[in-house]
Image (cartoon, rainbow, N blue to C red):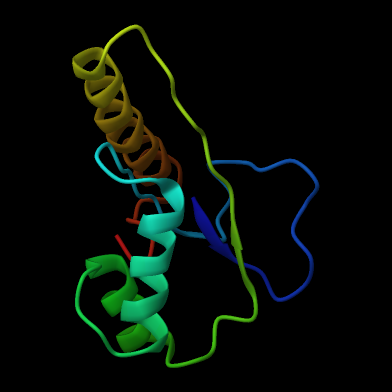
Length: 107
């Protein structure tokens, strides 16, 4: 989850907070690799991450008010793990849309 707060975020991450701007997932890369791709697309005008490109086009800032929360997943095998990760991302997006009647701004 990526959120944009004008002040410090709450201590506990709320996946349905109205300040969430992006839900993402990765199955084949580390979280750090995906975050680096977002950074390159959002702040260095490089390709590789559609959410980062959307962020750059929408906000045109340096991202100093961005906060990230992650949910690492380790399950019994890669197929189950990848399936759960993709499901979790889509479920979070669906729950967000049901609460706010809109997609997160960068999804």
